[in-house]
Image (cartoon, rainbow, N blue to C red; front, side, top):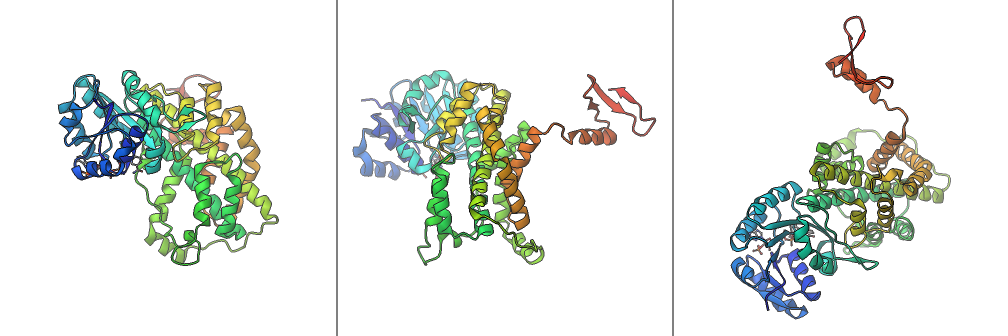
Length: 476
Ligand code: NDP
């Protein structure tokens, strides 16, 4: 029989996606540049479903049902372009090419328009959930045309994670929309991890809790509003002992965080969009700072820390404060991410449904959490919500958490514990809710040194003051 779908690129991700497809009843044609990977897949997992091994892209094209659908799971960047060029030679107008790699959405837009000229539907698909998700159900964020989604959608939905029976896969929007949303997903993931790490640091430094005690605290937090994959694995990491000794594993891991680039992309693009994703940006910068080993070593010698110890009257109250601060900061970080998706959607005309994005992040992906159901509800109730922060549920949650949040940031400052995530998100909250901002003063300065003009609260138009002359105002 002809195959339903093809997969080329059978390293960790492609191999697991192909197995997931086959296990869900699809006939899967498989190909890899180096034949050995194809042979290994068939030898080790051939019995899990119906695979059609092929040894060239031409052969792959020949064994597929029309319109053909081929998922490309090769290394991101130049290798993807190479494979797409080769595929374009063997495919026909109407066929669908899917890039499931971690492509930058700008590359996806370029590839989509190149292949569109040849009549081929190019679909950039964000896939989250890592190796395990690819096999057992990832969260899938496909871009591309609605026509392509008609063919591709049911297949992807069949292999996606399910929450309450709903697949974690939806047509995000045209061209690069899927990869854009995956990028912001990763940015939010950075912020969430940073906020959890700050909570850990505070409780450990200020209260002197051990990693084992902290594992218990996080396990408890995983029962309520904070219930999420990231809190669950935090407890697991903290409870784990060094296999080479008896100390906690977290104490022997080098404290220099690495990054593969999607968090950085989120911040770069946010700057272009004018989207204030401060919680995400601080998370990316905190990883960079941690990796500056030489600067840290030099500074450790010279820069003074707090001279007075911070005393906490009631440790349990402080634990509760940190939990509420974490939740409030998390709301802000997610709100910033969703605002950025809206900004991208407006600029590129993607018409992204934010409620659907929250829906498909509820399962399969790294930021899966109970909380996303609340976000889904907020956008379903009001699709044009100006910010998650003003949805009644979230407004109440952050307002109720604010006293704890402020206490935690003050204690952190007094104790010399860096909490860039907590402070940046609290500043964002205050920036958003303040009646008047000092932006007025900035506008005044800009007009003084650069005649950049200002607007008034009591009259329409733009104005300039004759700063060096008689200080009269004229309309610009
Ligand atoms: P890798 O990124 O390690 O890529 C290896 C695969 O790419 C191999 O199949 C390799 O073929 C193929 N390849 C490399 N260069 C070429 C080329 N010039 N022509 C043809 N094939 C080439 O594989 P992963 O499975 O880790 O990831 C695949 C994609 O999925 C990447 O874009 C990655 O960013 C993304 N991704 C990965 C996740 C993960 O957790 N690993 C999660 C989500 C997305 P060969 O065997 O012949 O060398």
